[in-house]
Length: 149
Image (cartoon, rainbow, N blue to C red; front, side, top):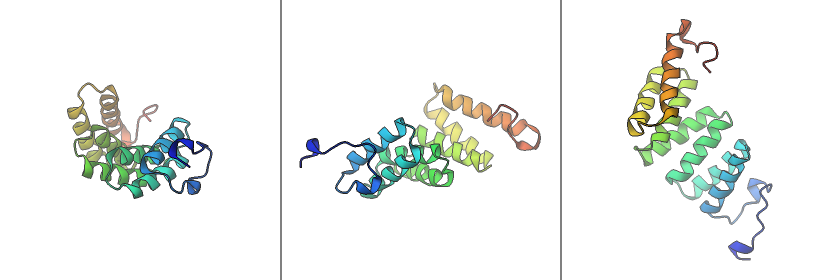
């Protein structure tokens, strides 16, 4: 059966994906993320990452899926791997900063947010994240101020 003739059942379990290329898995994982099935997407994207280690697009998608499914430690690892492959990935720095913030590592998070903002100075997302981080640090006890999370 050719690639174009294969059924495209998005509900198929990740283990049923034998024979899929890294590209196929990336596409399926991205579709799962768009459907807000982030934990399932992370499983599919982890398979793609094993097939093509060091592929930035796959690592970024995997990191996003893991972060969005609250697998923050695994997301941090994937963002770190992305930055090893592509140190100029502003989104990689942003994502790593968010993971570090979740771990309470504010100083390290600020460094990565500043790098992300320097690489993409027009990003309102990065600017807002840095402002939120500064606000959280000024709140009593270093905890986020009400409504800051």
